Image 1: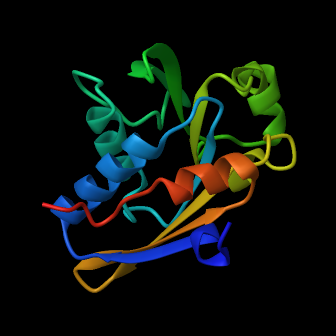
Image 2: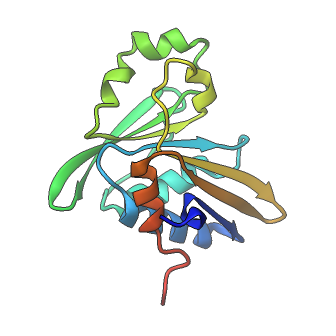
Image 3: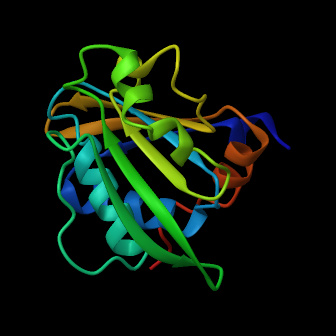
Length: 165
């Protein structure tokens, strides 16, 4: 594995580029993947997740789990149904809330777990395979993806962005 694929950086000048990256990530998903999303409020974490889920085949609304803490979605990946669970831990007051809610059981090697504000779940939150860091930059966003496991490396190696027209 080339060291260059452990990390991916891009500038997303607009919402369309964010949707394109979400689509590229959807095509690179693997069962069991844990993705952490880092960034300030308004950095595009939910927008990227929405684009990923829609590109992965979810039909219907993708709502932010700000108040529910988690929202599950079913997609078909490689011919099998996989649950993608989107977490937003912003409103958690302690990591124990994560445990009390039974969320740790969702990180089972089959589900794909996407976590906004993962620092709110440390140290009880399972480690990520991919870290996504979004930063507002001018009218767009800078994004960096970091592979932190073998599964994360597989994901980044199969990521094709920008898409070829």
